[in-house]
Length: 55
Image 1 (cartoon, rainbow, N blue to C red):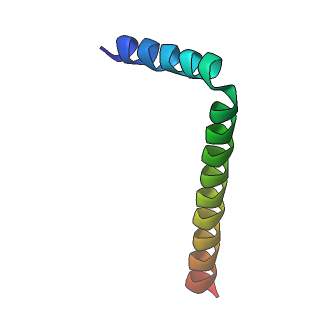
Image 2 (cartoon, helix red, strand yellow):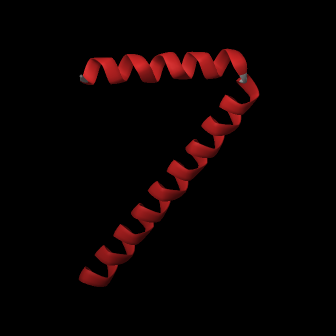
């Protein structure tokens, strides 16, 4: 089941790449930006927590 889902996702990304490469690029850029913002927010919160705990 897991392998089938992975193959389906890869086929979908391949189809999306050939039919709309600009859309895939925008989606990847937006996803990367959202991931970066989430990680920086998480680490900022962790740093504030540790500083409040020991400061």
